[in-house]
Structure formats: C-alpha cells, structure tokens
Length: 193
Image (cartoon, rainbow, N blue to C red; front, side):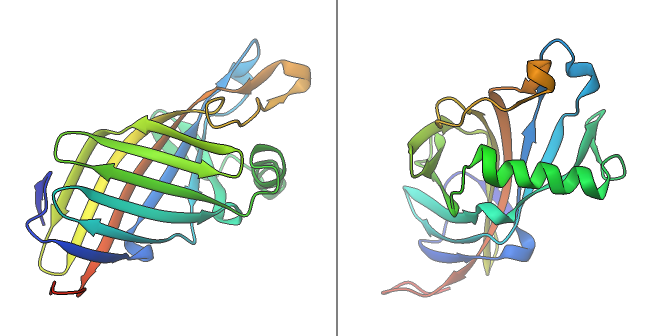
C-alpha cells in the first residue's frame, strides 16, 4: 500500500473488521498508582464505512460490549498473563456498568481534509472532538487504510472518574486511542474500484 494524506481514489469503503484494530490505553494515577495497572483495552465487533476524497470521513460504531481488557501494559508491551479471569470479568463489568453506564455503543468519527485529522466520539451525553496525531493513510487496488492516535479527555466526554481502594488510585483522565482501520473499496454512483 502506498502512503499519503489524500487518496487517489474517490468513493466509499466498508470496514474490514478482521484487518482493523482499535486499542485504548488507560493509565493509573494517585497515591498508590504503583500498585495498579496501566491497561490495554481492545475494541471488537466494529462496524463502519468510509468516504474518501478531498475531504475524507471514517465512521465506526463500537458496541460497548465489544470493549474488552486485553492485558496489562509493561514496558510498552501488553502482558496478557498478569490478569486472572476474575480480574478480567471485573474490569469488563466496570467498563460496561461504570465507565459507559449502560450505553449500547459509541460512535467514532474521524475526518481529514489533507491538512489535519480529528476524531469525534459521540455518546448519549454528548460528543467531543480531539486532534489525531501520527495520522497516515495508505491505499492499494482494493483497500484503503487509515491509522493514527488520539489522546482523549474522559471529563470532556462526560465520563466520571473511576477509582479504587477508597481513592488510593484512579484511572487517569487522559486515555490514548490508537487505530488502524482498513476499508474495502466498492462502487457507488459513478465511482468504481
């Protein structure tokens, strides 16, 4: 795939879920943060479409039930062996019941105009827009891929602080989302693969 900011092809593409990855990184902070874990969460069961041209748009829907803990971050890598099954169940329960408070899904939208890229996360309590860093787009005959990362502010997204052990540590307000989404090109009104 060739890289660049503006695709040579103009049209619409459908998300290829098994070639797409969205990961969320959380960070522990507070007095006893050294005893807590920074986590990697993986977003599964994604659906989405993309429109490519001079102003491109990617839209994905992420069911909250598809946001699952992958493991603990250690020295820049995810360690899947640290958490017990019980730990995983509890973290996944907190994601669904406390972080997203019974929401069914999140809507994720990324747009880019050749100069800047931004990510918008929408939920019932509102939406928030964040800049995308390390953005890249790549293209080949049948596929277009976009990747980048964005630092989100949970308060801006109306997500309340999540803590443990009577506030001895908590999840940082800062969360990093890294995405690498692949879309299969298909024909639309006057556009062909």
